[in-house]
Length: 352
Image 1 (cartoon, one colour):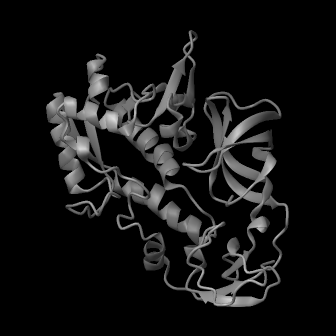
Image 2 (cartoon, one colour):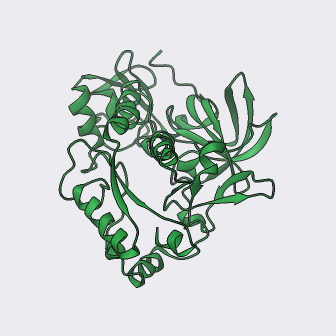
Image 3 (spheres, one colour):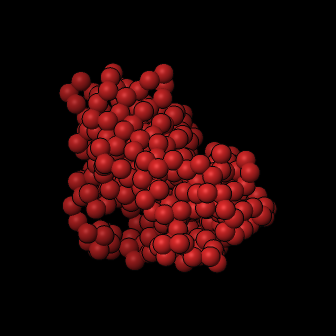
């Protein structure tokens, strides 16, 4: 906000009230929407010398982000609520209200860059500093949303400590405030407990690839593809190696586990594509990112009847339905889609 004001923009600070019952204090370094955070934002706005408002988007956030999150886990998928929040709240509900009030753009602290061409078209690119790049969670933005977005930190080539030092020089009390991370609406970080509270306990079987029962669980929604810890299986594997979650079947409430090699994915199909510009006109070779803090991998991708079909140059592990795949052409974000199914090098058959 201070950088935007310094650049000559007419800036107004807005804090989003996203919880119907916000707590007074953050829990650890996880939350970002408490009363305390609102007060921190107000103090920062006062220092910068800009107007400040609190906008209540709790109902929209509950419906579009929290309920979607719970429903996805209930269906055996692994969602990313940060992408959904950017798509449905920050650059939809918030942006629509801002435009209606006469503002031109939503400005956030994401580390990503927007490149504007002479014809006025805009592209979303990775941040100058790859270590801080957050373009993955912005891959859901379309042309209209990019046209009304500003990311003043995108060209920053400094460490987080230097960013904090800059904030301190600018007189911002939040300079030493802990980062918010993980899932903002699960302040204690206990995702399984959060889901259990809303979905209830539902005991089912944990089985191996042959269908042999190895143990039980209290809700298939508490597991993710590729998970190793917390399986609570008493019987060791025949080869003595760790087991991983290979498949989650909400239909029969079964979790299938097996060796790491069975996680190898050679391709996937993704739905609901969103393009940061024109949609690809034919098959192409891209790099892909599969999670917010994951690396890049080379893929071939083609759009057929509204579905994105992707083949990996080298097998990858830990790919789960519900996650987002974001395609890149060098540093440019091409677009994103939600993973619907994967192709395994070793098919998992026990839950069929």
